[in-house]
Image (cartoon, rainbow, N blue to C red; front, side, top):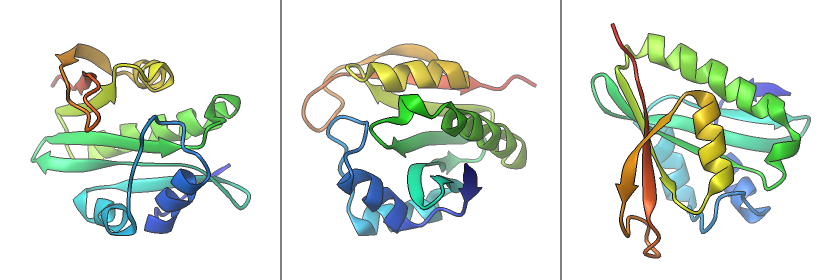
Length: 144
């Protein structure tokens, strides 16, 4: 399993293959825009794209995390370990004090992964998702 530079086609490949995230939608233009918003990475296993993730820098010290992963991601714990390593490096490189991630309230695998990465739930955002589903805002606060 390797980390490589993110390409918009990686996100499209995951979505076309059946992403783990419920109702995930992304077009090539939006996938390309992710590269300009902040640091990004792709985890591959051989030729298979397993996950792509990154941070959208909102303002200095604050970013919003995003991730797309294949439907059988639970069978590949190294993906999460790679994501955690990248996250740690990005916190230092970008001098972040807050990273947030709004997660669908019904996406338990994503919530479990977020907690493993160090995110804590801050609260419910009612009807946040485009389909009217609630989201739970998660964050990592970096002290001093």
